[in-house]
Structure formats: C-alpha cells, structure tokens
Image 1 (cartoon, helix red, strand yellow):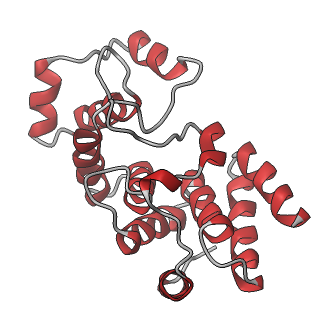
Image 2 (spheres, rainbow, N blue to C red):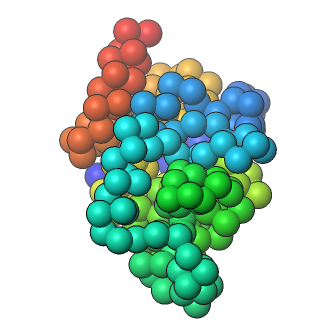
Length: 201
C-alpha cells in the first residue's frame, strides 16, 4: 500500500474546512494509550510509555546506560547514540527525565537520516504537538513516509487521525479502515480494537 501526497492534502483541507482536527495538546488521543502513547505535559511526563518496563530492561541487558559520552556521541550524530537518547528522553527511562525537546531533536536527526521508526515517532509528535513544534502538515508527511516503509505505528496513527480527528465522512472512515487494516497486518493489536469500534459506528 503506497500512500500519496493527495491523501495528505485531503486530510489537511478537511482539517481546515471542518475545523475538526483536534490536534492540540489537550486533545491528544487518549485511546492510543495502549500503544504506549500518552499526552506529554510540562512536568516531565513521558511521551511514550514503557508500561511493563521491558524497554528499560532490554537497555540494561544490552549495557546501554545514560552518560555524558552518549550525549556527546548523539551530538556528533552517532546513529546508535541518537536512538538511545531519543528513547530515553521520550520514555523517561534509564534514570533520565522525559524531555520532549531533546527527544524531538534526536528523532528529527534520525528521521532525516532515513530511520523509519523515527519517522513515525517524529510524525506523531509533530501531528499532536508533543514537541516544541505542532505542525499537522509536517506530521502527516513524516507519517506517510514511515507508512510507505511499512511502519505499523505510522499506519495506526494515520488511521486514528482519519478516524477521530477529521470530519466523520464516509471517505475518511474508508481511509481510516485501510490504515487500521495495515497496522493489524503489522501486529498492532490496538488497531484491531479501533477498527472494531470504527465498524460499529
């Protein structure tokens, strides 16, 4: 499934015309919490949630810890260091407090270097204002890039956007269903629940 720029343009146009694109911080989609996503607040609350601690345990098992050295390596655009920094700051793990600005900078560098997972995370942050910049257009563009590389998180987020943040037209519901189905194929159980709710409407 290849997503076109036309999809983005349609979404943005509908968003503006209908004034129903609820992408402000206080309207971050709470239903997506099961996918590890939660609204970022100013009191160092994480953007993404490591609910069972498995991510932090994995880092510890790999011997990856926060240090001045890893910050320096990330500042010098070392890919592995950037991934670690992005994860630590967005999840608030490994003894690091959540920091949306630092997470955003790291995800942006990774996404611009072609990291697909970072594209999806960056797109989500931009779309819902969970970073210093809220930009629906850029958010959708990054999500589309990630989805075209078969990133399940991007499909889930796009599905949710068309389902819950745009005018509930038949066209938007069809688009949402397509995205949810792709997310399901890629193992996102949350998409199954959202798809079921969509079909019951």
